[in-house]
Amino acid sequence: MTGVYADAVLVSVTVGDTVTLHTAGVKNLQPADVKWYFNDIRIAQLDGDLRFNCTDIQCNDRTEIFIDRLRLDRKTGALTIVNITNTHSGVYQLVVIGGGGTIFNVTVHDDPATHYNQVKKNQGESVTFNPGVRRDLIVVLKCLLNNTLIAEISVNQSQICADVQCKERFTDRLKLDNESASLTITNTNITDSGNYTSVILISSDRRFSITREKRFSLTVTSLSSSQPSGGAIAGIVVMLLLLL
Image 1 (tube, helix red, strand yellow):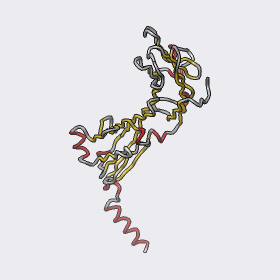
Image 2 (image 1 turned 90 degrees about the vertical axis):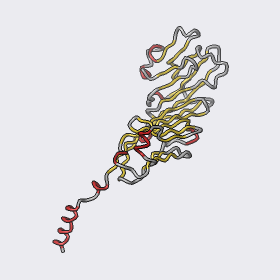
Image 3 (image 1 turned 120 degrees about the horizontal axis):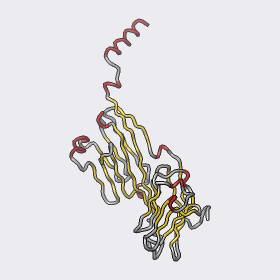
Image 4 (image 1 turned 60 degrees about the vertical axis):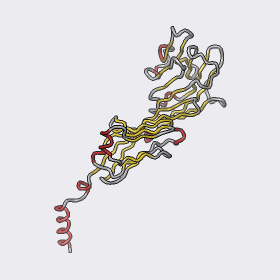
């Protein structure tokens, strides 16, 4: 069963993503009658009366790579792999008891820049955080500063600074681009320094979805600290005069 299938759903993710393989493509699905396989090894199962279900090593002792990473939805039968790694690349097969199923060919890429970037700016400059995902694939995007929500964009609407504290902090300096889903901070202050996170829900034809976290570490430097002091400038002038 392993290999590349012409009729398989191709899923491309990066290390650290969370991917959900949906069962929407299966007709007459009974969510309680499903089995999931990875490269021919059973990794998850729900039985007909919900008296038995299992994931990872509960299903098979050869599935150590999935320990604490699998989530099986009892209502839909969807399988979620949390914090995916290169070792999870392969063929996933949904088998429905009584017939039917879907094959997913999952490829995991290692691209650290997809998830983390360091950004340095001088006070007063603007900074833009780009999600790095095509806008038409984004279902929901949430931007957080130190785990506090500051902006959100979905298919039909967008919102900036829902609470008073956020509005007071940024005072109309946040700009959310609906076309690119990028967030811009204008006229940056030192207080804007911190850890920013974009939590992105990506979907493709209802067959699978990806949750990706992209982190930005922003450091804003004061103009006074980035410029030489008066004493330093005077010293430079004296040195130049001595050289003449």
